Image 1 (cartoon, rainbow, N blue to C red):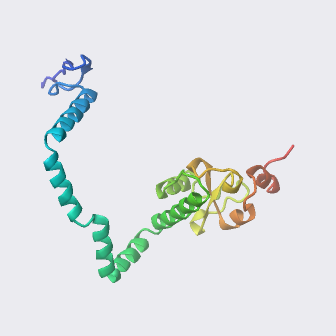
Image 2: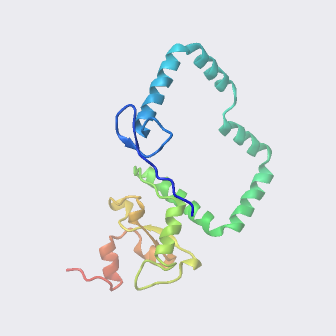
Image 3: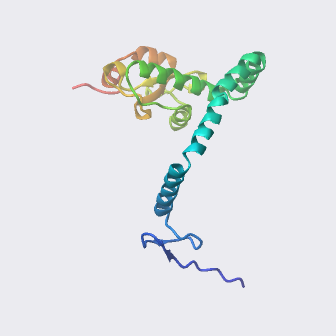
Length: 192
């Protein structure tokens, strides 16, 4: 029968904390600090090498510019790839375009919080592919709108906690109403 190796903890040479790794002499924070100190010392000793490196880096076109030039030259190929990607993954591309739209809109309103396409897809899964309106409960696979529970115009945020998915009919009837008023109109909540 094979015996299991037991790991004996070792002490960090620098700070004295117990660490798990057998090979390392330093704990992770001490190792990071040691690397920073070494880099700073090397930079002070070799300013000419740093200037030369930066000069070479600035002489090359940036990857963003290179990609933009490639897309310009191969516009038809890029458009075809985009069409194929959208056709292969319609749900992802739909959620991505919706999140980009709402994030762009919220930046205009001065909000800094964002939500991603993954957040929208997770929310759709959490809502079990149904409209968030408890009276409606229609399938979201037929189409959906990303809605702010508390409207941005009334101080709502763009965080995923303030986002719900509604069917187009429910979202258009909700407009920018407060959630309590909207639920009361649908007979879900009684206002006092």
